[in-house]
Length: 425
Image 1 (cartoon, one colour):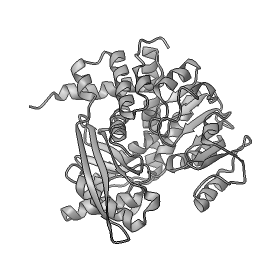
Image 2 (cartoon, one colour):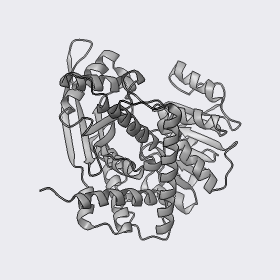
Image 3 (spheres, helix red, strand yellow):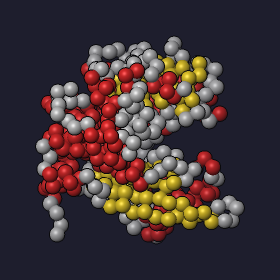
Image 4 (cartoon, one colour):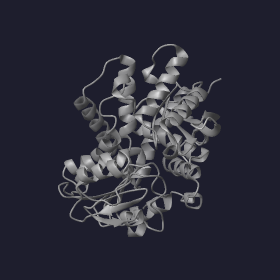
C-alpha cells in the first residue's frame, strides 16, 4: 500500500467509536481535510440518552436505557436504524451514526447520519413487552425525530412491526398519520416495495461489479455468508438465483457448509422452522470462525462488528470480502487483506442498499406516490454501481484500498456541505 496513512486505529480497535474516529483521521490526512472541518466531523452533533420504563407481562416495571445519536445533518435530515440488543452501548451507537453519515454521502442521497439503540434482549421479551418498550422509547426520542429532522429504520433485532409501532406512536402524538417519520414499514402503511431485500440486493450489485473488475465468472462462484438474518438470508437467496454457489452459511448458533453448494431454499425453510441454520441436513456443521476461513470466492460478513481481525485475516481465502454488516473488519485486518490482494467492499458501500431504498421509501411517503418494485430495483442498481466506480476511482487516485476510496468520496462530500453552510451563528 503506497500511502502514509497512520494505522493508530490498531491500538483502539477494541473500541468501535475510536475505530470510527481513527478511520476518519486516516482519510482526513489522505485528502488534506481542513483541520476545523475535521474536528467538527469527529464528534456527533447530538446525543440523546433516555430512560425507558416498561410495564412487563408480570405487571412489574423494568427500566431500560436507550440512545438516539445524530452525527451530522449538513446534507439533510438524519437517517439511521434502531437496534435492540443486550450489548448496545453509546460508543457503538456513535460509531454507527458516523458510518451512516458516510454511507448516505457515498450513495449521494440527501441525508445525514444517525443511529439509535436500546439495551434489551428482544428474544426474551413477549410481543406486548416489545410494543410497550418501542412506544415508550419513541415517545422519549420524539423531540428529535420526524420526516424533516431524523428518520429511523430497522436494524439488529428490529422489524417492520416495530417500525409500525414507531410510526403509530409518533402519529398519535401529532393527531394525524405521518408515514415519513420512519422507513422499513409494512407496505400497508406506506412501506416501499423491495425494502426487505434492499441491503442484500445492493450488496449483490456491488459484488457483481467487483467480479467483473477482477474478471471472475459469476456462474458457480463460491460464496460464504456469515450471519443469516435479513441481510445474509436474502443475500444468499438472491446470489444463488443469480448463479452464485452458496457453499457456507451461519448464524449466532453456528454454521453449515457444503463445497458442492447448499440448497438455499431448503436452508431458509430450516432456519424458519428451527430458528437456526445448524442441524440442516444438506451440509456439514462448521463454526463461525471456520466459515470466515473457508475456501470461497466471496465472503459476505453479514453479522456484527469486528469479526475479521489481525489474527484471522491471513487465513481468509476469499478473493472478495463484501461487508453486508457494519464494521466487520478491523483496521489492522484491512491492511493485511489489502496487501494480500483481497478486495474488501467496505460496509458504507456494500450495505448501502438498505438506506438507499429507505430514501426511496421516504420520498414516496412525502409525495404520496408509490413506485413499482422493478423501478425501485433499477434505481438501486444505478446508485450502487455508480458508488462502486466512484469509490474505485478514488482508491486508484490515492493508491489505497476501497475503504479509504469510499471514505475519500463520502468525507469530501460532507466536508463540502459543512463548509458551504458555515457555522451558525
